[in-house]
Length: 308
Image 1 (cartoon, rainbow, N blue to C red):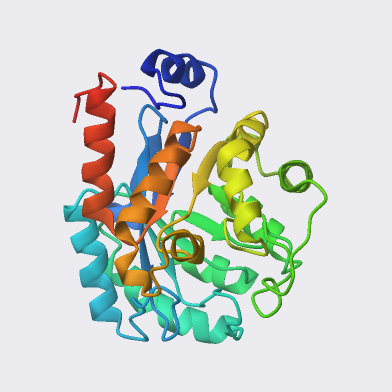
Image 2: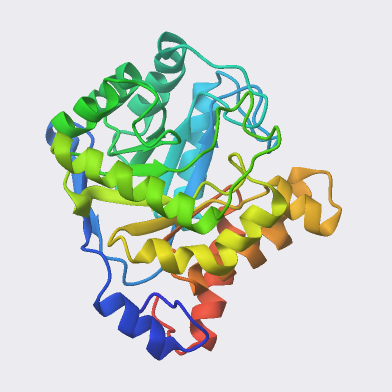
């Protein structure tokens, strides 16, 4: 299988041959510990499970751990390759959640998912939450602040030797959509993430454990988002890390289509996601797993890749 990064599957094969190293992961605990690696031989689907009351997408499960566990297991059955579990909404205007509250929401869900054969990522910017989640079986940390908001985050990830997703944002969730501005959005996102890679390496986090996320919708206008999807992923690929892109149900889909209900933005999300994979994204972070899995299988099949 090949990760397709252009309109020609041969270009995808060439890109994958010189692409990032496989990402090793380990989760669970004791005899139930699971491990594996993501080899980037195809696009991967990360299913979003929100244990929040105020998710922008309308699918937050508040503090219902059993509902979150059931949703994650259904996503696995639907073909998800990873689960991303979050307990703090980071939508524009969202209020922060303390690390203690995050941990209280996350730990029952992580306990119920310890036996999963796929990695569970935890979406947090708090070092205390990172440490507690990793101890409870999480395999990956996904930080919208690229390990910058909490001074202890670099050490927490370095000590665990786990993979990490570094995302770019401008501002914080309370202010990030108040007139975001860039002179050159692609160059500035690239340079910021390059700087965070250096900070991680200096802290003992190897580059092959890092995944990059351009942060679609995080301190960016519609045009900034479109420019990143049109031109930015190629620039980020040059940093030598795998790329994660999250466009699922976001406001840019609504801006382009006029659809105000995030739950009705599935078709637009699939279109944007396929474009991201075409440009080199390795992981799509999505709310709608079966639709995304089906779209990717058909798209890969048309390009000549019919393997499962």
